[in-house]
Image (tube, rainbow, N blue to C red; front, side, top):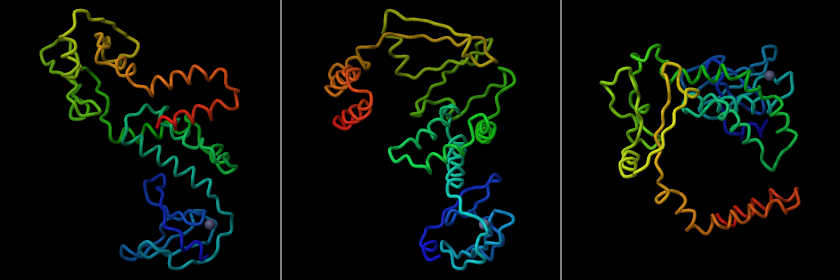
Length: 262
Ligand SMILES: [Zn+2]
């Protein structure tokens, strides 16, 4: 029990958004609260009599013991799901990508039986996506029903670096949303040739078509930067060598190369 008391108190949220206490591989929900500092918790397994009392950030009294094994992996799974929900609420990363990114974090060199069990217990994307989209809908405005309802404000009019991105288009009928930064407009105005392309497939259903206008700006783009960057040249050469490296050493060789450049 002494070991348990040394652990810092950790909390995760249950499905109703309330804090659960995580201690020694067990999870507790609030049973009672005396003023803000003293809390009585009981094990979330309904048939288990275990309780613990905490004062501020310390456990101060343990009640009856648990009548079941601790399950740290299940708690890890809950933590991962909580991170996914939090990200779904605050980011606009496409949901499948967000799920995949959290999953990839488990693929580290210290792969153990625990990691394997956590991956096995983690719900599939298809079983959590409704819950993730629900979290996103809490912070993201509802989709408009008609083009006239489209009312973009604040961060939805800006780039991720907070540059103005939505341009005025008040008197255009039917409604049209025009996106560009000032820099991009400057490039557009300075070239002799522009390239235009339209797509219906990726266009939001309320609108007819997504139309893009491109210019060639390689002189100030990545081509020049890459040409003058020795690290990039080295990376390209090493990448070309990779097909000659034995298959089980490819990852090591590539990681060493990245480390050398960093
Ligand atoms: Zn218990």
